[in-house]
Amino acid sequence: IALSADGVTVTSLANDFGFASVFARQIEAIAKQGDVAVVISTSGASPNAIAGVLAARRLGLVCVGLVGTPNSQLHGLVDVPIVTAGRTPAHVQELQLITCHLLCEMVEDALFPPDLHDEESVEDRTPVYPDLLRARGG
Image 1 (cartoon, rainbow, N blue to C red):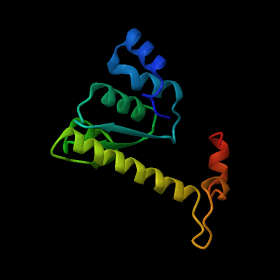
Image 2: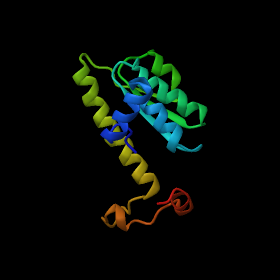
Image 3: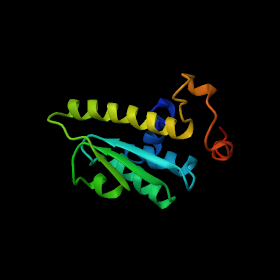
């Protein structure tokens, strides 16, 4: 779930609680222990990203961070820091986008291993962890 995608939710939380809490409030509302939170920050110092990670850690989530600045505050808070350092914020964000695509492909292949002899769509693959998907409503 992309916590920044719903403009109504982001706006209402920012108006009522302040923009620094828009991710933390959503995580508190929907996350469960065993979930994974992926946070993306160019600087590694965004107050809303940091608050979101702190909320996720309180709930027992595994936190993966794509950060553009090594040794940033966010880098030290996540379980798995992935540093995408670049010369400019635009380069950092381009690297983060590629990294997100690679992570999604890795998760997809772990849950739905491709048959090397038969090209089939993800929808037609048999899940490796069907009980996990059922438990999560998938």
